[in-house]
View 1: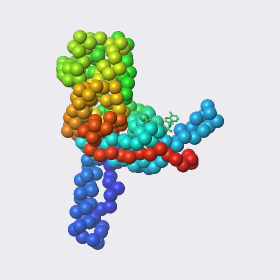
View 2: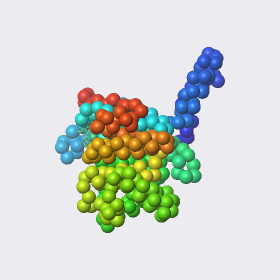
View 3: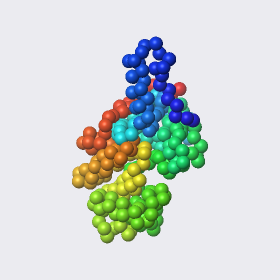
View 4: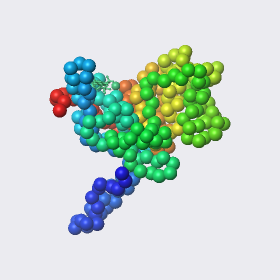
Amino acid sequence: MNSGTNFPTAASSPNGAALRQESITLATREHDVMLRAQGLHKTFRLHAQGGTAIPALDGVDLCVRHGECVALVGPSGAGKSTLLRCLYGNYLVGEGRIEIRHDDGHTQRWVDLSTATAREVLSVRRTTLGYVSQFLRVIPRVSTLDIVAEPLRRLGYGDGDAAGRARDLLARLNIPERLWALAPATFSGGEQQRINIARGLIAAAPVLLLDEPTASLDAQNRAVVAQLIGEARAAGSAIVGIFHDEATRDEVASRTLAMRPVLRPAH
Ligand SMILES: Nc1ncnc2c1ncn2[C@@H]1O[C@H](COP(=O)(O)OP(=O)(O)OP(=O)(O)O)[C@@H](O)[C@H]1O
Ligand SMILES: [Mg+2]
């Protein structure tokens, strides 16, 4: 799919300069768009429970530009986590499109995650789309330093550069140096979460999804994470996140997307 804009062009309009200017502005802003989701519907079917249908998303639209951070806000059950998982390609949507501006190192193109092959989804995740879940997936016997440095190594950075940046992040996130050579299986919940954040932010993915990255952190570490998110925005990342802590949300988000539980029955 190409990146051709769907916006109307002024060239064919009889309305002159004003429309032309508006169209130029829209086209310029279109250039900044990294993620656009339109008309997303998602219904879960519980096959083991008589095929009960649970509607979770009912016509969600979202557009995120370079350097923006959109916070998903709404009560429990509003579909925030479901939306984030759809945006990562973990859940397929029933209707709608999820388009990501993907640069695989050779070409730049729009990829629609709602129709992409598994191979395309993996390619998007390798270079364009990052996800910081709430919990660290511990890999047995791999050291904390290697877990954090790995995404940079995968992108082709040398061992020295990747380890240097990993050390810097671990120090900023107050992980004691004596833990860096150990596998984090035995670490506390907050330590594991900070390692997860360091790993998730080290490569500054162009599109970044954050699922409650500060949930088990104390105030001091929350502030560091908020700073790191600000730095990712300044570096151009387009971010969508769930932040239950309001102060953190106010600090890191440029705007919010209000979500509500779907009340009507699934169609
Ligand atoms: N894997 C699943 N299978 C079936 N139903 C699900 C599944 N995941 C979520 N749901 C349902 O979809 C709806 C939205 O859930 P979701 O977890 O996205 O809400 P949320 O906004 O993240 O809530 P919270 O703030 O409590 O985390 C809920 O009704 C939930 O029961
Ligand atoms: Mg949730």
